[in-house]
Length: 172
Image (cartoon, rainbow, N blue to C red):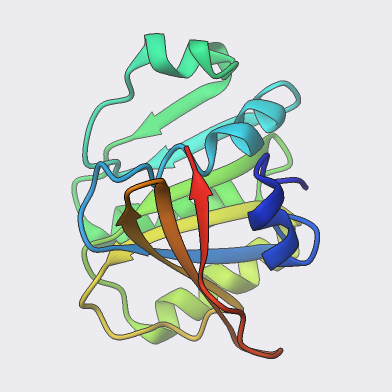
């Protein structure tokens, strides 16, 4: 599915891959990391639920509406424990009613990440997982390293398979 950003679509080979848990790393929040997801989330919110698990901030409804997110299809889960967060993400990735899962983890073990990847592949969904900048890399099929740039966001793509891609800048 198209990212909504031609340069990113080209870097990804056409758009966001389905059935993949995409790992996103940003040095700090507020650099436009969510804006990268808004076009695909808007499209998916028309046909299924969007599940956000453990977002660091509450969704700002006026901004989401301005980006065509169907608010009545947004479900925000605030788990009390890491185990509850893993369960919520797993269930979302396997549910036919959910179009995309966006999650935030402060820490995650490799076997936990692999299990979520399997669920994304089984469910055929789009999964996005924000992880801390300094956490050891996970065995992702796709990792985006995001940095602030004067024109927008500088993105370094890291893939499990395939040739390295030069960093690209997406204007926001």
